[in-house]
Image (tube, rainbow, N blue to C red; front, side, top):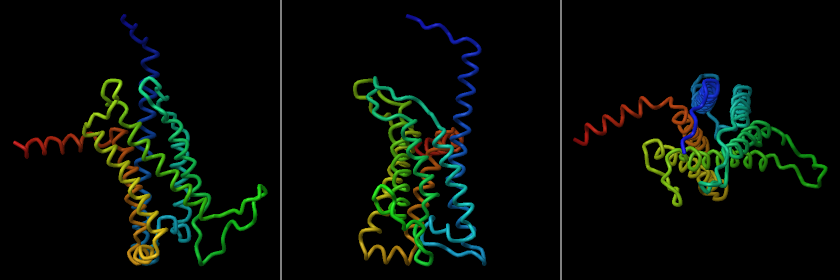
Amino acid sequence: MTHPAPDHDTAKRRNQLVLEYLKVRRALGGLGVLLPAALLVYAALPAGAMQPSISEFYYTHMDGFLVGCLCAIGVFLASYKGYPRDPARGEWLSDRVLTLAAGLGAFGVALFPVRNPATPNLCTDPITVGLECHAGLLHFGSAALFLVAIALMSIFQFTRKDRGPMPGNRILWTSHNILYVACGAVMLAAIGVLGLVAMVPAIKSFAGRVNLIFWAETVAVLAFATAWLVKSKSLDRPLAALSRLGAQAGR
């Protein structure tokens, strides 16, 4: 049975929707590159200072930039609808659920600053539901939610276009899918590193000397940016050029 071709208005709306998705993806990728780059530039200035983590730049002159960038990422993610869940392909999550969770995580990182020993805790009063407000838990929980949701998005949702036939529905290892899975794996690995720093005192001492938390977070944010830039087709030409160079080198 053949399906009727979409009319002109339907095709136009579909093309506009695709263009809007590409713009949002480019914005997310651009913000992901801009955030750590701007913080590093500030740290290199005479009036600046390197911080142990991205979050601790909140207590420098970059506080407004950091909060604004995180909130912008949160807005873009929370407003990104993406594609609906496809039960026929065995999907248990949708773009909407993951990007909404990631957006809420980005807002949480911005609105619940990491606790700085040089400043009073910003959230010490008991909450009316009987739980003690723990600023650090809210901050790190939000950061974990953001990174885990985006890692799952990169590994499972960005690869859905290039999947094998049912019932296996396995990832086809195209160059794009390799990058998506690699970016997701890097984000999950960064969470593992941050968890080790938090739990192992010896690693925490070493991490403080080399700013390991900052660099782990930076790698995770750049992986986030790379996945969205690839999804926005912004890196198609460089990737094609690398593929041609690889093919020529293999001859």
